[in-house]
Length: 162
Image 1 (tube, rainbow, N blue to C red):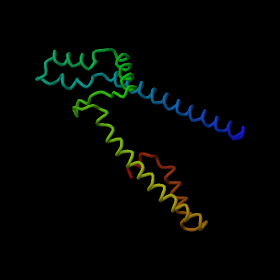
Image 2: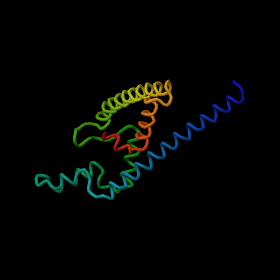
Image 3: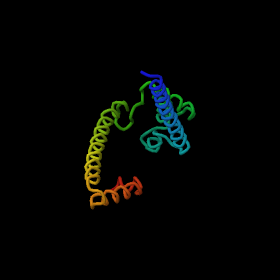
Image 4: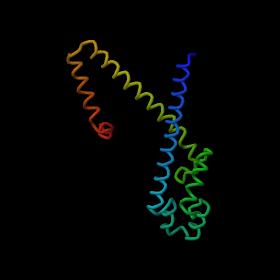
C-alpha cells in the first residue's frame, strides 16, 4: 500500500468515526429533548390508573415508587440511559413483557420490509434509468425527468400517504 492510499484510508476512517460520533450525539440530544418534553407535559404511565375508583391512592403511590416515577426527571433520565446502555429497556405495561422481547421481532420484520422496499425501488429506478439512457430525449427520458422532479419536490409525508 502506498503512502497516498494509507493517508486516504486514514482520512476515510476518521470521517466514518466522526459521522458515528455525530450520530451518537444526535440520538442523545433527541432522547434528552423527548424525555424533557414528556416530563414537562405532566402525568405518567400511572396517571390513568390513579383515576380508576378501584385503585387506591396508596397502591398507585407504591407503584410510582416501584417504577421510580417518584424520582426527579433528571434522575429518571440518568437511570433510563444507564439501563438502555446495558440493553435493559424496561417492562411494558400493556404487553406485560420486557420491551426488548417486544421490539426485536418487530425490528427484524421492519428491516425485512425496508430491504424489500429498497430492492424494489432500486429495480424500478435502474430499469427506468437504463431505458431513459438508451433513448435520450424520448418519451421515457422526459417521463423519468418529470417523475424525478415530482418525487424530489413533493414533501415526504405526501409521498408516504400516496
